[in-house]
Length: 213
Image (cartoon, rainbow, N blue to C red; front, side, top):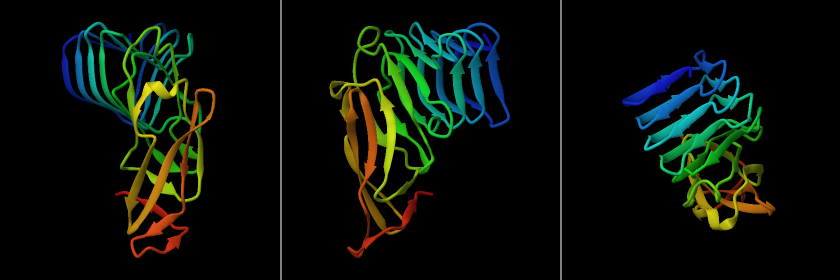
């Protein structure tokens, strides 16, 4: 393991030039430990299986991933055991490279980070019914930049409608404009994020792009 935690870490930050890695399994292994805030803008990787391994009674409260989490062996970036807790996952990895892959018990909350129409989070879930129980709440992270009248394709793959507890629609507000969005089941277990035209607070339709600071 590149980093193995069995205790309590309040804040762990892997910056954009940072790498937490293992030649074999588990770039970051959290077993029966607690990580309250994990921020990754660099690389967490394994040469074999599981870039991030959350097992036993382990807890990750919030992970914000704007970098890369991956594994070369089984191709699973994140593993979350049925007995573990993963509260909130915010993610921008995906459209500009390889999608984040996640196996096991769903995070309680999953928020996509949208940087642009070509740079936004994509996640592929697997074995969520066989390994893990529960559902996830979908949302758009407040740091995002959304464009009106746009389809962000395949922001989620691998989930049925019964796996998503809430967040199939909402409104993103910033800069004096509202953008209504819908999580659309475009095919099978694939979900697109679809936005309507931006509406300025004075009620006039506009094509502006909004940004939350």
